[in-house]
Amino acid sequence: MRPVKIITAFLLVEPMLAFVAPQTRRFSSVKSHQPSTSTHGWNREKQQQKLKVSTRSSQSLLNVASYDEECDVLVLGSGPAGRAIASLLSSSKVGLSVSLADTNFGKEWAPNYGVWTNEWDAILEAYQSFGISLSGGSEGGCIDMEWKITDCYFGGSFDIPTTQRMRLDRPYKRVDKNALRDCLSNGSYKVLDAKHISRAINVNMYSPPGSLVHDETGTTIQLEQSNGDKMTVRTKLLIDTTGHETKLVLRDTREPYSAPGFQIAYGCLVEVDESDSPDKTHIGPYDKEAMTLFDYRTDHFDDKGEMTMTKAEKSPTFMYAMPLKDNCIFFEETSLVARPGVSLQECKDRCATRLEHHGIKVARVLEEEFCYIPMGGALPIKDQRVMGLGGAAVMAHPSTGYHLCRCLMGATAMAAAIQNEMSISNPNLDKVAASAYHALWTPENIKQRNFAVFGGEFLMKQNVVGLRGFFDGFFKLPLPLWGGFLAGWPGLPFNESHESWFARLWYGLNFIVRIPLPVALDMAVSIATYCITEGVPLPQSVTPFLGEPSSYEFERNADTVGDLAIKAEARRMITTSKVTEDVPVAFNDKAESKAETPISLKKTEKEPVSD
Image (cartoon, rainbow, N blue to C red):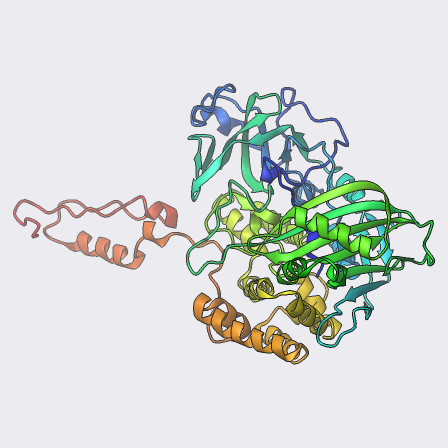
């Protein structure tokens, strides 16, 4: 469950700008922009009603005379999620005019992404179906390293020797982040060197007043350019990919509600001094031909005192290691999930202690990585016009932190849903947004997530002994069962082993008999307690008896239409009444117009209306 690498987010002043990448092409000039000629572009005749906005202040966008930029879709954020959805929607298959706004577009991506080989193959195929080729990297397909085997170490508890290795016959890959960034930067979308200044204060309401306004035909938003100037953008659709701590996408935090946990990790890409190494096929205990997914051993604290060992056992971390070329290797000391999170300094110190214990001498540090990954928490609230993707849509795996493949695959589903809704004339933009969210979070996918949320809560309770027993049993399951749990997303390999209530129940029964008895008993008690305190979500995910979670699908507000049959009956009766002076205007055939023609019963003076 390599959580950390797949969804690394960073502690920045602007958390929404966590994923950024270096400039690979010249930025388009906002001032010289020409309106899109796309068939999906704005009808110029309909823009004569625009009012004026100052580019030097955040005065109401209702007073706009002209826009600095117009597009079908505006994407906020330029990490993997932002560039992926911008590339998909601007592809020849979809054909929308897309702008992407981020003042950090030209910066490098910091995370090191690790993925299972067959999951990445599914991503390549999905993007190729949109005409997008993810290529490059020394291994091709945006990959710079592949290991045919994956190793784990869970020794030190339950009579498992500390030297015992568990070898998984499943290949793992390291994504070439620069190649992926470049492939997702070559689309037909336009880059705006700007960021939004708004904050959601309620559903579809934002501060400062007038900085972001939705209407029937689109959205007007004010952005701040890197030079401090303001610009105004008119778009039909707005997609937020600025990360888990977004300022625009609200979460449904009604009770019962569990706050997110946090995966914290310190990573370093290093060159190792092998001059005294007796075995050049290994770096310390780590085989150069294998990727080490988990090393939960704590023998490196044996001589550090009881207090240090107790702390390491109570707040466990594990080593994640990617041997690269020659003496180059990426190490990462990771706290899987905790609330509150383990400190980054603690992870860094433990990494150094572990390497010293194994006799690994670091000759040079090439890169450092500081990872902060919120996991779990509430899903986006319904009926929002701003569409979230990636962290903004809470797509990180709640138990493992895996995110990249889930996000990239989810982006293809969102793009297909938007394409379908926008293909009709005069699309209902509220319905477009609802369909985009539904493409990510179907009721079945929500149930699968709820199952994984419980997993995250259980893992947060465990000390290092419990985690060793948990994962030793987990990886003894058949590959489709543990692989499906790690994937946890429609379209990824083995997910079919988890995408129904019966499949999840079968997984649970197979799992609990493979873990040590103390861990199994703790899990049974935790399941009962969680069902009592959190209610429906967990039992709903593994039984057919408790219905479905509420859907994101669009539902017209019937309160504004009323009971059409009764209103029609009223009109017929009023027409034949001998005491009614006026007959109401006939109902329009369109439901939305019917709400605008209320019935008025006006009586004659001879027959006053009774109270």
